[in-house]
Length: 91
Image 1 (tube, one colour):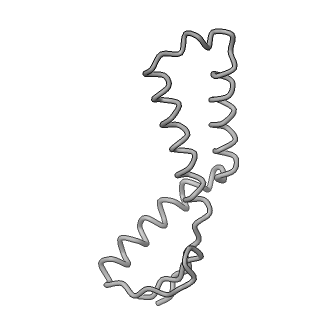
Image 2 (cartoon, helix red, strand yellow):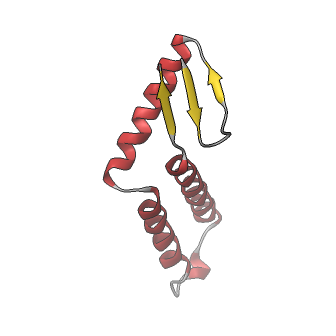
């Protein structure tokens, strides 16, 4: 099976087992973005974080909350990268 991706503009050959696994991952990502695209998800997370950070009680933000905010930003980055990934499947 040959898989072409926009990430590196080259073709890669995979075993059938690897191709099946990649296809399942592709299906999961596609299903995830059926409801909202990556831009909408990122905008929603950013709004949530900004609202929290700019409240009057910002001095009450604990170190644990800061870790959660950093993790949310990592999720935003991952979602953006997944949303920008396009894979064409060729037999």
